[in-house]
Length: 393
Ligand SMILES: Cc1ncc(COP(=O)(O)O)c(C=O)c1O
Image 1 (tube, rainbow, N blue to C red):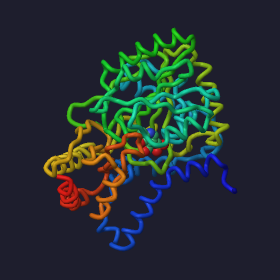
Image 2: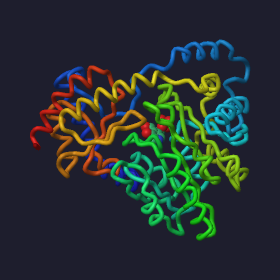
Image 3: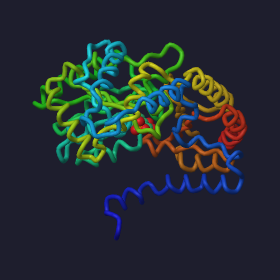
Image 4: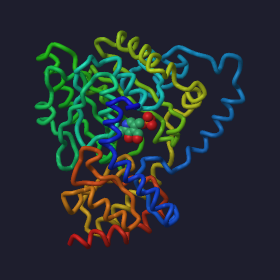
C-alpha cells in the first residue's frame, strides 16, 4: 500500500462523500453546470469588499526590501497590534499584540493550537453537528475527537457536555455561528460552560481549554450577536479567519488569540509560535497579513446573505421542510423527512440539487444547504425541493 493506512482509512470512510461530489461533477457534465443547483460547498459567492482590491494594490505598490522575507513566527508585530486594537473593542477585553498569532486561516489556527496543547490520547470534546475536519485536526496531533449532542435547536446541552468531560479532556471546542447549523451560543450558555470548565479543571487537576472557532462571527442576521468567550472563561483561545467575512478563503489568512487572562499565556503563545513553524506554515502569508491589518471591522454586505437565507427559508417552509432558522453563517440544516439522510440527498440529486447529508457532520437525519450561492440558484431549486418533499407526505 502506497498511502499510509490511516490516510487510506480516511479516504475509504469518506468515500460516500467523494461519491456525492463525483455524482455532482457527473450531473454538471451531463446537464451543464448552470442547470445543476449546487449547495454543497461553503465557498463564499460574494466578492470581497471593494476596499480589498484597493488596499491590496496599495500594499503591493508600497512593498520594499525585506517585505517578502521570513518574519517572526507569530506574524508582523504591527499587524498583531492592529488586530489587538480591534479585538479589544469586539471582545470587550483589553488585548495586546502579545496575545495574537497570525495563521494560515482558521484551519491553520486550530492545528497550531491543537499541536501546542495536545499530548497523545488527550481528548477534544465538541458539540455536534460539527465541522467535518475537526476529527482530522485532533488526530493530526495525537488527540481524539469526542462528540456530544446539542439540543434539538442546536444550542449547547450543558448536561451532555458535563457528562462528556473526562480526565483526558484537554480542550472543549465550540464553533459559533456554527457550520453546519448556523446556530449561535448565547452569553448565558457560554457563562455556564465557563463555570463548568473551571469546576472540571479543578476536579481533574489540569486546565481544560475552551477553543472557539469563529470564522463566521461577522455573518449574523437580524439583531443576533456573538458573545465573547474571553468574558466567559479565562482559559480560552480564539481561532478565526478572514475567509468567510471578507470572502478570501483562498488567501489563507487568519489568526489565533489567547485570552489575556489565561494562566499559562506566555508558554502557550511561545508553543504556538513554534507549532506554526514546525507544522510547515512557518508564518502566515506576508502580503495578506499587511492587507487584513487595514481591513479590521470590514466585511462583505451581510444583508446579501440574509436575503438569501430568507428566500431559502420561506421557500422551504412553504414546501413543508422542518428546520431551525439560522441566526448566522450561511448554512441551513433542515431535518430530513426520513431517517436515512443519504437516501434523501440522493432523491434531491434526481432534481439536480446538490446538498450534503447531515451524517457527514455527525448530524444524521438532517442535510446541509450552503446558501452562499446566486439568488437564482435558490429560486430555481425550490420547485425541486418541493417535489421531493411531496414524495414523503
Ligand atoms: C467551522 C469552520 N472552521 C474552520 C474552517 C476553516 O476556515 P479557513 O478557510 O479560514 O481555514 C471552516 C471552513 O469552512 C469552517 O466552516
